[in-house]
Length: 156
Image (tube, rainbow, N blue to C red; front, side, top):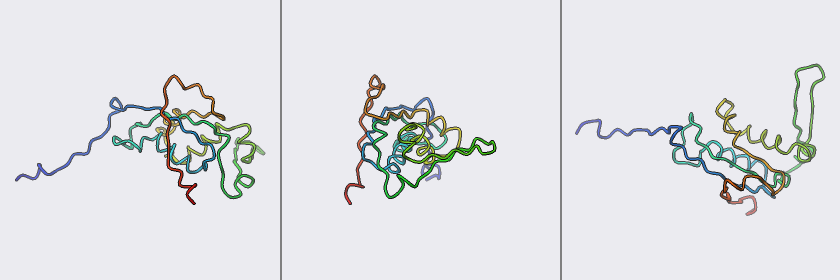
């Protein structure tokens, strides 16, 4: 038999073949880090068979109840988020309480962005993330599928 019959071919996804779904994720009483990992995988498309690292094949994600997320340990009072404007004395420091109260969308986008690759493609993927502080959202017309994940943190 010839050698070429046993060779396998890797199928690469084309951007035209990608089918995007809408997911509704309720993050009430869920740990922030665990949610960030799962949402980043949905945005990248790692849950699909057709995943290709250099093709944007991820889904749309709608997060609701973002203010009611859970943080373990002393992160609620100790964790700080820094912004530097580049000017002298341009450092701004915010803690979790301030981020949760006033900047929920920025807070989640920061955490989820850290779980993704740092390139142009991931910035494009992050545009498909929609965050809402409570359970009201304006994406009902897209018929998002409720995303249910196993809550292994409750088994302990």
